Image (cartoon, rainbow, N blue to C red; front, side, top):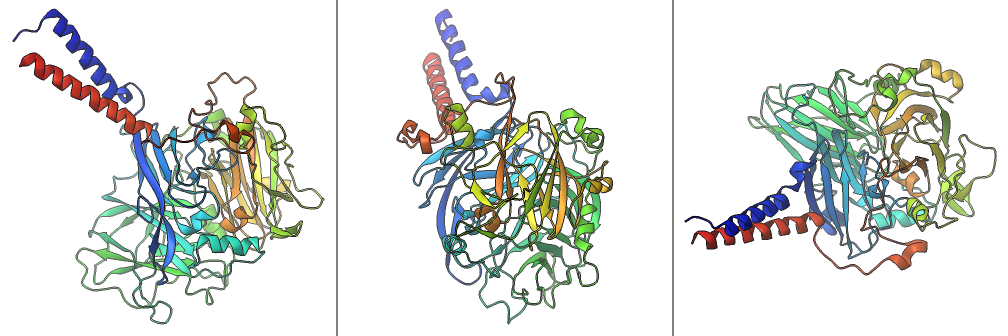
Length: 594
């Protein structure tokens, strides 16, 4: 049947609209969408029933699987009984601190509300994770993997693995996060954790005294002869862990978004908040299964023996269950610098092709002039105004009622101060909302001086930084003579040894307000954090995105917040419109050709 001219015109219009609706992303970078429901479930990872935070009823939560330059939409439903924010550890949110998911940049999502994060994984590859940033909630779960893959045209610097496996490790308490929070509020130390979880499960019963019966443990199933990429994330509270697999080498391949020189390790120290990729080849004879171990470090390890996570590596042709003693971890009795030297051995693979921004030609970071130096000193928790607090440079950060950038946008005065000191000052400690006034396009040196008694990790949102120096003792200007100026690893979370320092270099090309924090949850909760405010004085909308249309309001701006009408994510709505147009198109064609 021949179409009339008007029918042909209508057909063209419908086809154009339908294809435009279904494929808008083809004209730009692709978009992926997720709907995450954060809720409580009851599990018994260490043999004691407790409430944990699940994502879509999973603990740990589901993977976000993106690729360089993808747009990511995550509609977060808060089904908890308290406020919620989700942060994306290591995802650099180019020009978009509005999506960062910490209290200095976002109002919290109230209970029974949902909020849609919408951001781009720009110029980035690697292994990361998401987690709740408020109220000590990460101690109860709510975390999951976030992978940014190379674009197909960019080769990875190793043979394509036969499989990709996520492993979450972390120290764990059988008390709920609310009870842990109350203990810290009362000025108490949390004490020894009750164990270590691997992928949300307790230890295999390798020891009948230390591990009770009935514990559900993790089993990683593999095929003999194949090589797997293991993405290992430390999502714990405060305890550094040593990771190892019995009789298997760990080939380090990536650290938080940057490919490393590939080196063999029999075991590897991983600190709170850090992520690594290891290539592991299943080259053993499978006479039995093998232990996967994550054990406590930098503590009295004989007393802390029960703070050990144990999973099982199971070959498909295994001839028996795992048995016998655990593989031994490092012994620091005669060499206190073992872990430090291992950390220094991690080097960047400068020849690998990955999606990486290169501000100021910063791969040649050793030849760029440093514009500012910030020495951030931490000490053991101290009493401020009758309350136990943690501090950086004597300032214990208090989260503002009105997020910093939102206050700027609406000209709310007195929310914060741009007076964070660049070095420790000889004055009494205090609680304050003090922020670093950083210079756009500066190239800064940040020294984390850890005069606390515990191993600490520090994280900077919105950036990767070059870890150029690390040692015991106090940092001085002469310490720069020992910096690695050639192939230092670039990452977003670094360890700082007790009684030691770590120096990093950062190119300040990402406009916004960015969190600097201790990843140790107890220290972070007690105030060991601040923010960098980075403003382009010639801002024209190209170096920082405007506040999103769905911004939540709180504090001094609470009157701007409207009641929420619950709906599916923007992406879901978009898909529904696409389906509608396609349905109309099919109906039109059916009518025309009938």
